[in-house]
Length: 293
Image 1 (cartoon, rainbow, N blue to C red):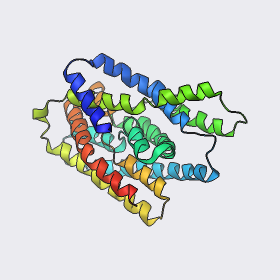
Image 2 (spheres, rainbow, N blue to C red):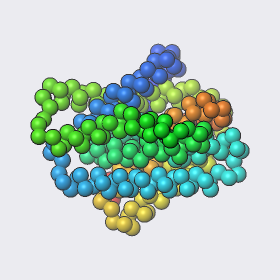
Image 3 (cartoon, one colour):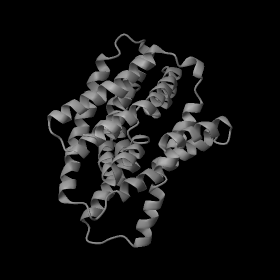
Image 4 (cartoon, rainbow, N blue to C red):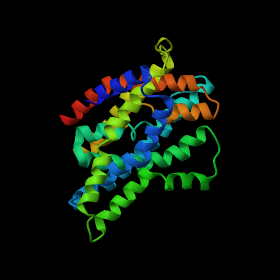
């Protein structure tokens, strides 16, 4: 279903039905309205203490994963051209675990999986605006903290936890509204992904650096995460969500930052395209393995 929606996004962009401006507007709607509603609605009043404990474990695991990504990014691309190196490093640290990852995780692991996936986003957002952004520019610590602290997805998680402990429930019509808006996440996100893929020149994607990056981002990293968590006997659902998050392709923001800060934006776009297309093959395989564990 997800991949068919991506194909629809690809086709309607090629036909000019979904313009670049409309895609940008939809992206903002998803990031600032739809995705936060989806995250908040995953915090049900019926969550057990055990699930809350697992959320803490997910937070620790995700932090460890992003530290691993940061270390790997420093050693994997030493032979790549300097203007490409920082782009590949950023895309290794910051994957598409939010915009593309949460819809995929929810489709595989359900609402509890979505809850855990939203916890994964906390370290991701911190690393995105600290270790990640520092590859392109030097930003004041105050600005980094402000950017992380004001992100709507982070606030959706915070408000979700607050809602769990307050002694009242939201009116039924309001809960239903939030859930209905949140259900648009998969459709809108995948339409945008398909639209982004439509803008890449297919004749130029045969780039060994893109395939080198994709091999590590889509296969080696999730295999390493799976191996560590399996040896630690981690809860199967926590392991599944963590591994699937680690198997996501390059984040769409990679190309935008490369363009803004004068890096190789064409390479960033190709890397985004190649890793996303290849993930259409690798993600179902990884998801199948995880569901069988």
